[in-house]
Length: 528
Image (cartoon, rainbow, N blue to C red; front, side, top):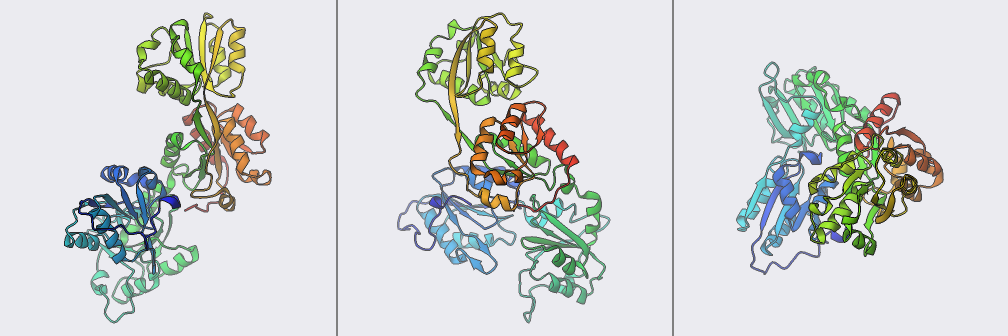
């Protein structure tokens, strides 16, 4: 959830709508729970909106897409519990739009599929508020797809009915025609968990074969997905035994049989594994994305932050005297970015480096040069300080700039000087503990349901992690390190190194985790 300082006190702080400026409301579907399934249009609107009104099941990482100035309003509803009533939500949308704001009403799934988006659109139209509807991927379809169940199949079902199971089935006259529904090919029933037994009974009482295949999908299309399959006569019992709970989708029909063949979602190599990524939020993206693609449940918990050294007189002197150097050595993507951004900020460009050769510690640092139109001249075979030093054994000595983090190991400067190089050490940034460890899950809560692996990509991240996890609890957090130096630091702080990357790269790290999980038994209790 967003930080509390950005939340509107919904009951007390509605804006004065007397202003005449006119904004616009966007009814945006957030998709079924996987933030990567948000549409491009939805992502564009999230980045630029000024007010965001959210539902209960919105993925928390979508909230990180909005600007720091965006006002976030929690309008979540769960069963009979309401943060805001529907009439209050309607009023919020109209009032903020009349203040001239771009308002995104972010709704789980699709706004018009059992999301009350239609009601909100009618209200906006009646009050002359411009609006746009951005469709989303409905859980009524996505959850079945991720459970390996195609809702239609020409050999099994050419009919699909999507209905809600949320209505009171014991009322005198149901809004559902159960006799007609019992004859349909496939039923996709949203919000049916509470009434599952009654739904199945209604279908069988109206002629549905008790042996008809059926499935209940909990938290579909997310890493916490769980699926129970059986017949409609036994599904309520099976779901209760498994402890399935909302949000859930119920699918009834012959297509459920195909799950055994088409269950791609849960067959990914890291399905059911929980991995905590401790990189800075700006750097975690690629690692998290790769792990999610392989099926892992990922929680990003940055333990360090990167802070540039400013002011930095030494950097200014170096930038003004680049012509006097033969080599520039960059030991991290951060170092590359800080150095080149400073160069360009002074009005120079890549031509200022024409007299320099560039060495990088590994391919990730080399990739950081690409946006500046640069390529490295030297990349070692082993992506660590020792490997880079080895590569300089056959290089003609000269004057070089060693640009890196404050407090880095002295392997490179000492070794290069021994080879005859004149080394100018240039500290560009420092690594500090992250400012906030507690949002949205604290490490205290994580101890109750710890990750199967925690990633460490530097010795400083091992130190920072140790600062928030007591010595007695560190055995709960086995780690995958990016290389031997990080492994040594992790062990010194009392962590168990379960896996180690063969090369100091993200791809190699993911490979090490994949191999580890092939060997190790695990139990899975999802974070979500």
